[in-house]
Image (tube, rainbow, N blue to C red; front, side, top):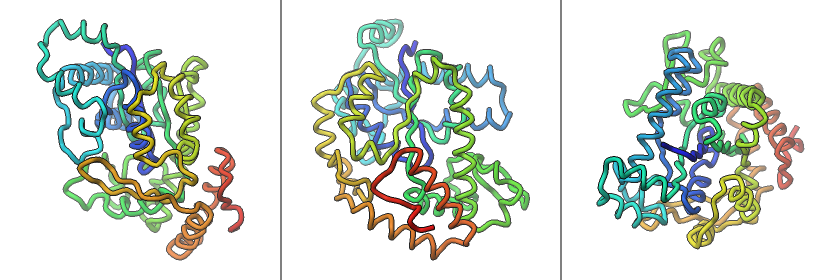
Length: 338
C-alpha cells in the first residue's frame, strides 16, 4: 500500500531530527514516524535472531500499518512537547481532519488521491541498508545523516555510562563477557569491551559502525545507490538551501511556504555548525545562536584530551580527521592537534 517511503537514518546525536522536521514541511511528506520497530528488526536480523524473509514481511506490514495510521490519524502523537508530535508539523490540521474520516476500503482511495510519502526515522540502521532496499524495493529513498564524531562524543559517553542501569531502557542490549550489558551495535568491540574505559568503548564502537556502514554501502546495487543519499549535518546546516534543492529532486517532492517558515525559525542556513543549542517550548524548539566553529572545536579537543586515555584520544583524532577529509569540512582541522 505504501508506494513511496523515506527512511531517515543515523546514529545517536547525528542530527536526524532536524532533517526530518525539515522534510515534513515538504509536499506529500507525512509526519515523521519515530518508531523503534525498524531498528529492532534490523538489529535482530544482523545478529541472526530472525530470518530475512520474516524480517522483510514484518517491515512491509509495519509500513502499511503506519500509513494506515497516518491517513486515518490512528496512533498519532498529540503530546505538545514531543518532537514527533503532530503539533510539530505544519500539517497538524490535516491530521485532525483525518481523525473524522470513514475507514475501510475507502482508505485506498485516500492513498491514490493524496499520494502520501511515508516518512520513517530509524537509528543505527545504516549497517543494514540493503535489508531495507530488499524489503521496500524501488519505493524506498534512504537518507543517511552523518555528523563529526567529536560533536556526538559526549552524548555517546553519557549513554554508554547508563546502559543496563535504567529501567526505562528502550534500546536493544546484549550481554558482555562479564555478564554486564552493552548496546547491540557494540558487538564489534565485544572481546575487549569490559576492559575498556567508557571513552575507549565509544571510539571503538563509533569506528566499528563507520566500517560496517561502508560495507553496507558497498553491497548496494547501482539502482539502490541512486536511491540513497548521505547528508553531513555540518553541510546541511550551513548550506541548507543547496540541500533543500537536492532533497526536492531526490524525493520528487516540493518545498512549501511552511519550509521557509521552518528555516527562519531554525535560523537556517547558519554561518557555522557548532552550538545551536535549543530549548523546548510549547511553540516548538527555540534555537540559540551558533558558535564559532574554530573555537568550539578547539574547546572540544582540549576537553577530550583531559577526559580520555591516550588510546581513546588518539583514535578519536584519527576518525575525526577521516570524517573531515571524507566530507570536506573546511572550517575546522583536527590535523592541527596531532
